[in-house]
Image (cartoon, rainbow, N blue to C red; front, side):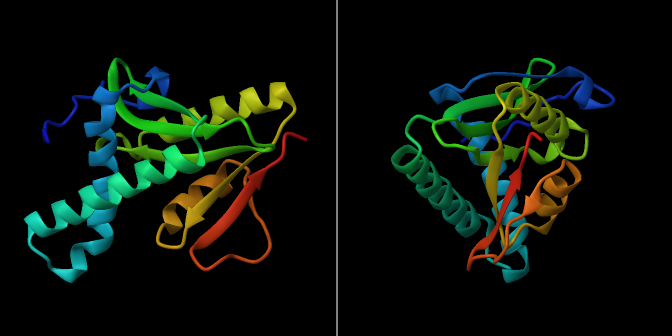
Length: 171
């Protein structure tokens, strides 16, 4: 696995956000983005880097198998900041409402408006189609829940054992 960091355009990344369909060669970017989140959760444990890397790679592989099995028709969009791939949106349009199955950004792209631009574009598509959007936020990711709330998602009653289901309505 390569560990080169993308060079992002200077300034607010939101002005240059675009997307393209994901291809197999993008797996390293998605793996690093997933791994960065998992490493932040597991850092207090104090495990050696090689152990953390194996665990994060294994969790990434399980997540990808889950997506393939439970959302085989989901659209996988690579998120670009300028010309640089910095993350992925996995969106299942076969459900009503549409379901955001996964949104992940490399740490270098976070806090630059990239994720907000991606979700705003998606919500504009959903508004045009007169359809809602839902997602599940993991209990271990309160930053993500706050992010989605800022963009107009509301929590559905009764969090489950792993997190919170949230929804956005075009009305």
